[in-house]
Length: 408
Ligand SMILES: [Zn+2]
Image (cartoon, rainbow, N blue to C red; front, side):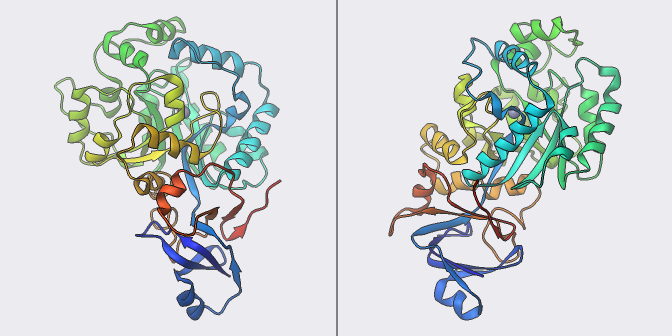
């Protein structure tokens, strides 16, 4: 099949005007100007008309478990109060509610042009109950051992067993305040190349807890029986990368396996540690969830200059209102107008493809890559990247793995 469109945005240089993409099975086999592609491939032509054809978007951080919590939790005075509020909402949900929530989330993500999603789930046992995923999914088991630090090994082993029913998976020790260092280590040792994710340095309260052994999060975690001996010494970042008290930065065993969410709270010393890391981890920022919590400015350019690969994600609907990555790109552009729309689009295509160790399969329109594509309306001519980042609507045409998807 040959798909012709007004513009083909390959993410390999400028968009191709009057372009085309040839698809065979689940792969892209050719891309270029329509006349050239047509000459090289004797195949049926599907003309998408005045549309920009681009790689399907990749959501690098999301919790579909909580799709049903949209607008259920108003903004709280503190991050700790939000944790209390989500815990209270979760206590009302049944496994059936979670399955419905995940399915609803998949449908919504797809409607907004997402073809790959990094989904953290607190319930890996539910994966088996789900029908075939409508989009490409990396399942990460979100792991917390704060209430049972003596059962960490068991927790990791059983999560891996449950994840095996998924095609792509990884492990996600939740955050340094809920997951022990032992849990982080066990996850790193769980397998060669195992993908890993965590939440880090998200709030001022997390910083206060680890640096000063005080504040609302410190008091809350202490009240539930957490061992607080790691507090009062180091920043969350220093703790995560295993920096010694002398300030040197021995990186985690395999930083490139980590996709780290947030990094909102970083000290000057933290930036020094990040600069010293030889191999960098990947970073995911959620602009609208960030705004909901009122965190300090996300230091995207500084992290980028230090060599960190920055991706965007929606986070869950317990702190956001939709699963649209277009809305995340628009929100990001509002706060960081100095970053070009092309660079912003990379944060939902090329960059997360690298974070998932799929740089040669996902995130671009290039021969040999998976045929994961979307089309959105575009003008006759103009700034294609600017137009895409400003797009505000549903995506009516989507292809996953070479198959055009319908909408229910
Ligand atoms: Zn999250």
